[in-house]
Image 1 (cartoon, rainbow, N blue to C red):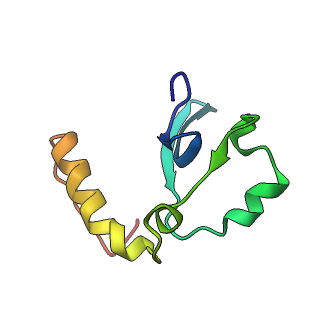
Image 2: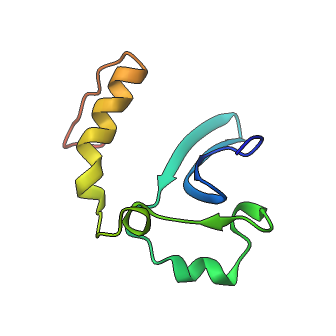
Image 3: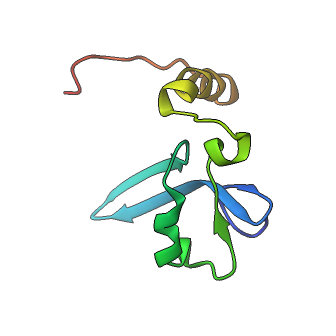
Length: 93
């Protein structure tokens, strides 16, 4: 919910979005909770947001959802939204 970033299901964050700037380098990313063990979040204040929770696709859908389940549709949607083509290489260098 505004003004918080990320993807939310009610008062629980499903996906965190972040940007980091340092040493003249900018990096960005996201963390989509697919089948995350949510009990770990009982020990911290996630994203520093008191009173807000964390959820996962598996929890919300009531079945086990892995990264492999969501990777292809996520990448397809990314290409559509950002009007781009993603190229994949086996060699990360």
